Length: 141
Ligand SMILES: O=c1ccn([C@H]2C[C@H](O)[C@@H](CO)O2)c(=O)[nH]1
Ligand SMILES: [Zn+2]
Image (tube, rainbow, N blue to C red; front, side, top):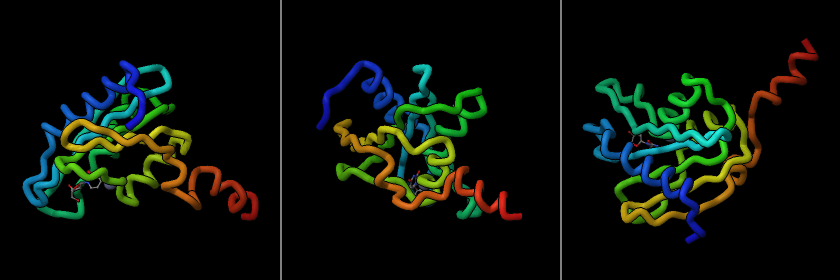
């Protein structure tokens, strides 16, 4: 466990609240996420499943998309919670989606009891393919 600032407390509360709105009738795996922007705003999201299973949106991508479409592109932290007591790392699709907007984030994994584990996001994506990755290939064309 790490020290808790009021902002991070709010971030964690937000992801837990968002988990309450998870739409997950197929997996029954509830996930909530919240992102903290550099300007101090918090946006949240939950997983949204679909009868066509592959269309499912994870909570992290939902939260991040909410922030992006409201004009925020710089992020300090992201929190994710599930109904489990174990701390869960994000899926590969979300890792990729998140690094589009920067890899230097604090990542908070939150369990069902509201306990959290903080880590740097970067180690979760050891060989990133990010916007910069397109640079050299563009020059070669
Ligand atoms: O990082 C993850 C991994 C999974 N899920 C959701 C997708 C699906 O609705 C359910 C089970 O995979 O959990 C997330 O929201 N975030
Ligand atoms: Zn995901």
